[in-house]
Length: 424
Image (cartoon, rainbow, N blue to C red; front, side, top):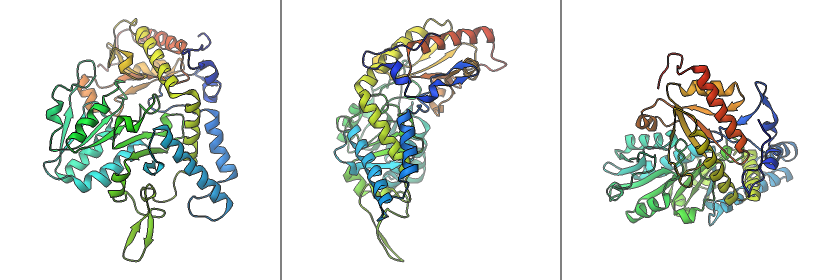
């Protein structure tokens, strides 16, 4: 395989790759080609160093101590919150709640907003492409409150079918929850349009930004969403840290998600009053190191420029779509136009199970994802048990796409059109 070259005029991929120590390792004697970024991204050295520096020099609990280490930890923690707010263009950091990830953020909204407000006859609108994290919490809410789930259907190309959207979003609709970008199809959804329709009927708009926030500029004011969730580990940050953004007025109205330390203002043996937002939703000792690491990851992405990150995703995704189209008997799922999708490509090769594809690619040092990607209803709609998925980020280049294509051709040779007794 040739040396990685610069892909985008805005990003020097060769230089970027030097910032990621894991990309230097060999897997099964081959240079690692990491194409599983929709699951989790790799971490630059500056993020790794920021975690180490915190634990080495100012490890302490936040908001509680009166000593130097606690003051420094609190400053780092709250600076990270400010960085997040600026990154998504939030008007104030008071609307930024630190959670474990997008999944917990969605469960927080389901528990503290939806369960308290929905009743029989109310409706929750989702799409057929949602990750289980943006489906199961609403299933639980519907079961407990008597509300009904409704779904936006999909077009053949994996885009949303909005022909009957005026009927789907109606006076009974109380909440609309959709992914900004599909983790399977790569589809970028019209959340701004959906938010306008939802608000016209008095409904709340929830956006799963787990895939979009790492890849493109996101402005919560432009999207006009009421809640947005995303995870740090998909955007160069640590695992175990994520963000729930909420409109301050809604967060003020909501009851706490968990009880414990830090989320209280005053406590007696019988009653308690709550701390101000966002602390009302951050019970117990938070992931201080994770938040600081996320802040460092945001600094790194800001230096690259999110417009450049998006342009890079467009270019490498376009190249990959063209390259994969040369593989005989390979089917790509999702929109054909790179402008309407992010850096995620799911595909299957006729008569070869995606798990076999992933296993053979791993023998060549190529990491992809294979399975249902926590989207079983979508797999049922596609009429497949799973797909293989390649997903790209700022350190991926065209020669890695070429390696993927060569690996797929080898998989076809090895399998010979068979899949060890398993079939699609």
